[in-house]
Every structure is written in structure tokens, then in C-alpha cells.
Amino acid sequence: MEIQLWREILLPYEQAVEELKVKFESIIYENRMLGKYSPIELVDGRVKKISSILEKAHKKNIPMNKIEEEIEDISGIRIICQFVEDIDKVVDIIKKRNDMTIKFEKDYITNIKESGYRSYHMIVYYDVHTALGEKRVQAEIQIRTLAMNFWATIEHSLQYKYKKNMPENIRERLIKASHAVLQLDQEMSVIRNEIINAQDSFNVKSNVIADI
Ligand code: 0O2
Image (cartoon, rainbow, N blue to C red; front, side, top):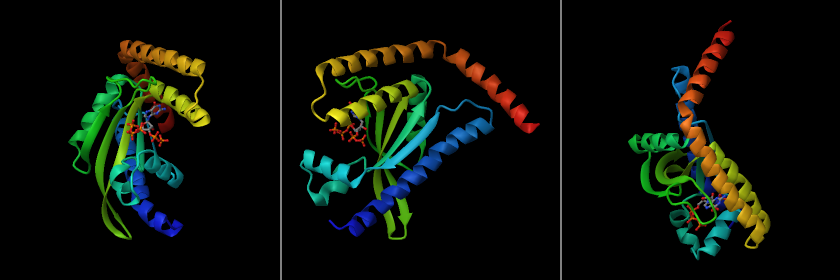
């Protein structure tokens, strides 16, 4: 397919990523302005590379005319939370919104993947208005803690490096590390209130300094 055609196809997905990032980032900003704890720590987003789209289509036997329907993560948003409890809060926020419709959810936090991967995924429909007209696109929203994200980022780069041939000892270490991440998340949850209070007083102090 010509590069110009790909540009046109990807345009609405790029816009969806930009808009969704702004919308989720405003949750952080508004909570902070109101002196409230934000269940979202940070937001990231990307449009899948053409090569990755084609690779996935090939792997899953998806014909060209079904790519937009069947590859649900062309637009990808990642929402990072401090604590596991925040993930449910973010899921609730998304469910209550009327600017996105949930297609389905995958709970890899309750159902941890064999690799050790933990994250909550939501596929949503989202309407964009571009220079080429109105379009309903799909976007994958991954919600995870800082600790889960640390593990997934490292594991993803190793997957990329080794492709299908990850050495057994590295795979085992990653699984061990995922147990440590689970324990870290659990420990942090126990002292969650202490941490939130400490962050609140730190924020109050920095605001006072900023006002001066
Ligand atoms: P990217 O964009 O490079 O992250 P699959 O059949 O496993 O290919 P499926 O059915 O489309 O994937 O959905 P699934 O399993 O929910 O995975 C979608 C995305 O979740 C992946 O995107 C990863 O971002 C993330 N993910 C899933 N499993 C793992 C895992 O074991 N380790 C890590 N690090 N991430 C994972 P892509 O397509 O890999 O692409």
C-alpha cells in the first residue's frame, strides 16, 4: 500500500491518541488544582508503526481490508497509576464517560499472563473529526501501576531483542521479577494512605513556595 494511503488511514488514529492523551492528562491537572489525589500518575500514547501493523496482520492472518476492524491497538494509550487500587478508579472513570464506548476489557491483573505480564486493557470506540471527515476509531487503553510498567517495559524490550527465542534463564528471571513486582505493589498498597498524605503535604508546601 502506498505511503500516502497509510498517512490517510492513520490520521484519525493519530488524532485519537492526541485527544485521549489531553483528556486523561486533564484528570491529573484538575485533581492537582483541586488539591485532590489523582488516580492517574502519567499518560502516554502512540500510534502503532506501519511495520508493526503489518507484522500483526500477518501473524494473525488478517486481510488488508479487515486491519482497522481487527487490529484494535492502532491507537494506544497507556495510563500509569501509583497504586493497584487506582486502576479500578480509572476503569470506573472511563466507564462513566460518554465520549468513549467500551468494546471489551481484558483483566490481566486478575488473570496474570504466562509471561508474568499484568495490566488492565480496555478497547474503546472513539469518534474523531479530521480534515477527511468524521470517523469512529478503536483505541486500546492499557492501565497499570508504575511497578507493572517498569516490568513490562523491560520485558517488552527483551521480547523485541530475542523475538521468539528468549533464553530460558532470562524468561525465568522475568517471571521471578514479576513476582517481586506483585509483592512491591502489595506492600505499597498497605502503606498507600501514608504515601498519599505525605504527597499531599509535599504538594501543599510546593504550592506555597510557587505562590511566593
Ligand atoms: P506493542 O504495540 O509493541 O506493545 P497478542 O495476540 O498477544 O499479540 P492481542 O490479542 O492483540 O495480542 O492483545 P493482548 O494480549 O491484550 O496484547 C496487546 C498488548 O498488550 C501488546 O501489544 C503489549 O503492548 C501488551 N502485552 C500483552 N502481553 C504482553 C507481555 O507478555 N509482555 C509485555 N511487555 N506486553 C504485553 P503488542 O501488539 O505486543 O504491541
